Length: 405
Image (cartoon, rainbow, N blue to C red; front, side, top):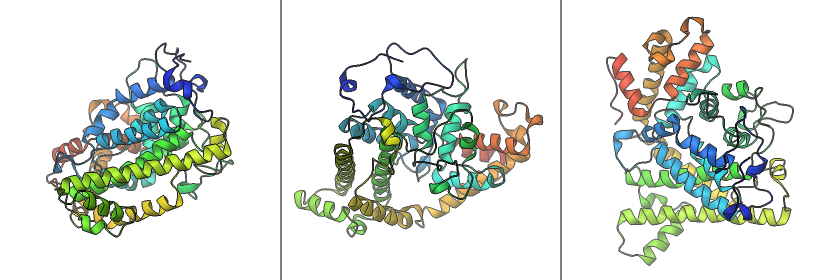
């Protein structure tokens, strides 16, 4: 393993992941003399094709609605900043945390969650589609950059954190649990698990838990920001929500004549700060009381060690409960989502019925593919599209394409 040390590494907590004890990579590689395994993984992710595509994949709005709304890339950078801050405060491995934050959305489709739902429906007879599992598929198979292997050949701890983004996926006996209870695990995870055991029955590292909760913090705060700036709801609509009403009162008291754009920013920054401090306070108390001696203690815990307090959970749920009808289901957004849904389903049907329409790199060995493998290849192709490329492909093969405005 790499011998990089000093600085933050000298102060690493005993329950943090130690890069010197990494379980390694599926395809062994000589260690880097200048980077830890997770610094190396971070660099591979940043240089990947899938990461660059995040620039033109949207959160809620399509890419040409305005220059200031979040894309998957800007969201990812914001998640990474929050995750690094929490990891540093808790003396975790900051590089692994950053790596997981940067990679967490690689598997997302064009047109946000609408694209994911449309692909999942199109793939219903072939194993379905799950963006988290697609991230694993990208970093273990679909990226084709290196001479010695497909994928990015990331460290075991990185793959574990990406797959278990939402916690354990199975019970110890292998039966799916949590969000997958009563149904099969996503296709990509089922296929990969026999190749490299990611211990799906345990919690991931604290670093992975930080990255996951940072995603939640960024998502809430920045969807509020985008929704306000898009005029989907107003500041007055937020006054009855936990935290937000108090923040608005404080801002107005301190800055009585502040313009709305700055009020929005002050509101968002206070929400992020408060949520981050809540996570750090609760985790610090847990570590001080329970004194986990290693990352194994984190993995074997009976619940997440990085989480919100009960008060913050209630506030988080209230914000999500507000955003669902007022942003994701807003009358101005629903028609766009419906058009995007039809577009993704149409592209899938077109390429499945005539796979010769796909680019040359996706047409190899078509004659030998089973219906399931053909569907998965079409799915991989569409999932990797940016919003603008999906629009262009739809215009290429269909007489009418919605403007998505």
